[in-house]
Amino acid sequence: MEGTRRQTIDYGLQREHKDALTTFCYEGKDPNLREKPYCFPCLYYDHKTVVSELKRCSRCHVAWYCSAECQTRHFKDHRAICKQIAEDEKCLELAAIPLRHFVDPEEDNAVAENILETRAGELGDIAEAQDYFKARIILANSYWTEAYMSEVKEVWEKSLFHFLELLRLYHISCPLEICFRVPFLLLYLNRDDEAYTFIRYWIELDNIDDEETLLRHKRSREGDWIYPVEPNCRYRDMFEDYTKLDGQEETEPYLMALAINKMRIVASNDFLSRALDYTLHETDGRRIQQVRSVVQEMLIGNDNDVASQRQQRDRLLDKIDFYDSKTLGIFLTCEPVSEARQFMNVDDVFRGEYDYPLGIALANGFRSFFRIPGAVDLVRQRV
Ligand SMILES: [Zn+2]
Ligand SMILES: [Zn+2]
Image (cartoon, rainbow, N blue to C red; front, side, top):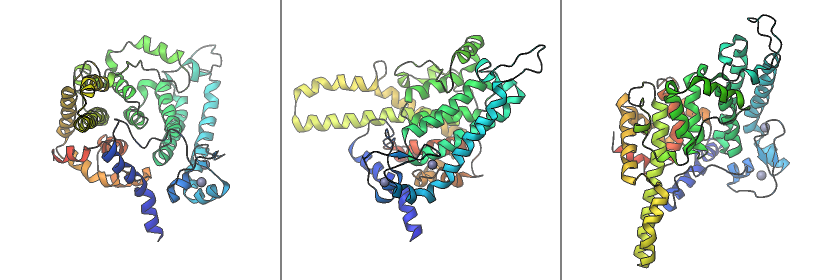
């Protein structure tokens, strides 16, 4: 009995959403992002959304309940992650103390400084700042785990905040894995232009002015987004923009995020196109015919037509397959678990089977990937 219920909890709900999405409407976004929090047990167990005023869990602050009964009901499922987040927050706070009054042993007559402010971008050079780095990445991951389950915007933003802070403080000393996670976080938040900008920044890092970058880091504040974003840049041709995309190894997570970006654009355009054709057919309306091109242009951006977006999408998928001819086949085997609510379940599927960084791309990206209508067919045509 317990086993059956578990399966409904883990897979049932989002499947419904996915089917509804493919049948009715697609806007080029992740349809499951929850702009507002909801009562977790009411939705998980009863499949109903409660609109009354919600209370937050006072320990982790990232779980919401409509009543004390609901909180009790959810306790068994929530206990572990709640405790984890509270402990991780405490560890980070403790690790920050020595950095706030840091006296540089390499400098004569050094005075105490708060290097979390004065040395942003350079903490990777300071041995004493390594524990802080570890504490923050653990916390970022805990929020990720919770966000993956609840899909509440505020929780995704918390995880993003900590990943961005790691990059702001440690910059180029951050392991690639941290850079790889951010575009997927942004895609879950439907911030596709920022995902594009972020990838471009890190791929083209060698061409970026070091002094200017460092200055930007020092002027910023905790968790700030410090990458300049050009509106609608997600429509741009990344193969023109990223001169290194073709030559660089270990780019699977970026390629996958970019492919998701382009697949969303093409799929939403295809949806709109079909909807317009249907409306035209049904109404035989001339005025609609006139607005068709305008609407189409609005959706796809001014400089790029849909054929070009489609071509870029296909080129990215080819590229993913190029690294390992089995890659897209592996995608397909992951599809059945892409809606599992627990991130750990997903992790279990991959453990030891797929090499870094492909494993990162899959574990972090496949849910977004398969939520795009037509994704399964697109992959099937290629394997
Ligand atoms: Zn409730
Ligand atoms: Zn909690």
